[in-house]
Image (tube, rainbow, N blue to C red; front, side):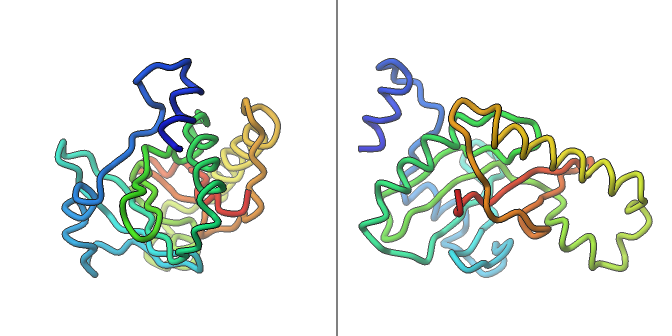
Length: 180
């Protein structure tokens, strides 16, 4: 069903905005979902750091929920998020439907959550008011885009510091769209 919808969104082309990964690819990328690959845990699942065969580093979100009735919502989420293109929104790269629970594959954002940087005393040297304002402005711009400028509006509904990721340049990236 996901493949059909992605094809219909792309005019029948075999080029997908989101890739469909195999369960074996993602198991290998995460070293069988090893504990040392865990980036974070939340109410809806666990996020693992993965390294794909092409050496691309990714974040793989493994859902806890196995409710089959949520399949249509999951498919719609993948389709909508694969169409989102903003420099301050974490990009979805693909998904896997072969496993017991849905797996989402996102670009990897290297510096972790804003929450971590707010509460980590060792990171204070870069966390000036100027940088805080920059992060707030970037996050606000991403939310404006999601809510009103995206081809299909996405209402985030779970904006908090744990859902703001910072890249190697401390640029804000909005993540975790389970509530839209």
